[in-house]
Amino acid sequence: MESSDSELDLIRVEKAFRKRMPGFCGPLTAEKTPHGQSNPTYIISSQSGKYVLRRKPDGVLLPSAHAVEREYRVMTALAESDLPVPRTHFLCEDPEEIGAVFFVMDYVSGNVFTDPGLPGLSISERESVYDQMNLGLAKLHKLNPEMLGLSDFGRPGNYFERQYSRWSRQYEASATEHFSEMEDLQQWLKNNIPEEDGPPCLVHGDWRIDNLIYKTGSFHLAAVIDWEISTLGNPLADLGTQLMQWEMPAGNESRGLSELDRKSLGIPNNTDYVENYARRVGMTEIPDLTFAVAFSFFRMAAIMQGIKKRVLDGNASNPEWGIKGMNFIPLFVRKALEYINSKD
Image (cartoon, rainbow, N blue to C red; front, side, top):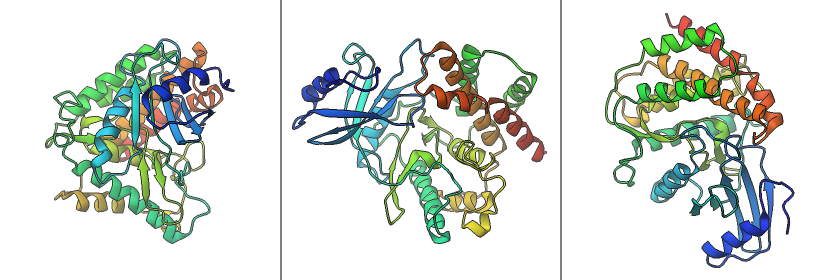
């Protein structure tokens, strides 16, 4: 059976499933999802079940990017925790088998919200969605990496210093032009890296509403997905990612909350959300998130620059989405500088 997408050879995929999954029963079909811009993602349907396949993209890849191996490892380790993740089945590190390194996990049904304004939901449903997001993040950061077998999942040393260095390299490696605002932002970040406070914990790296699956009806958290840039580090990075997203304009493309009346919608403001999180993880003080938010904007600009480079090189997972997304690069940078200035 041939795939409708040239990136996936279903004959080779089915052979890989039969070899590694006892009880698998074909034939299978594949549908490429609009999500998973960094790593092409497919819903695989067969007589024995429904699965998700995540693979590395084609073409020359940036160092340490598209780490599906890390995704597989962390989700496998989290299977026995109280943080819900899809059950993993196998990882294939031989790129010759289907054309790229890939892994397979269960398909988790439920609601995925791309717009954090949650149009169409009631006030109480929105309150539940955001409380579950907050509770899930607190659960993640309270996990003990050593007990999960993840004590070596991140390098030692200052997390934000390492992350700034990594994403600066990634940005420079994929840069197609330079502009002064980005240079200003990079200089501010370099001069304001905070000291590390406390032992490292497991951080998701991209904790946003569209990386969460909610149970239909109850709006309880059903699964956390997209662990590609997870590591050991500073938990404030995940909080910074959330607040960064909410600073963006509202709507499906920019996916922010900046013009919305959150109180009337049942969506918590930043202060209430952070206070709730701090209480749940046992913090004695409300943390300063200025650097974390500014860094999150910078990292998103670097990620989108990588996607822009792949669009221009002709190997983007979703070129149409990538063209839209790359137009946000200057906005991410401008928003970061505005956020920094608002805290002075």
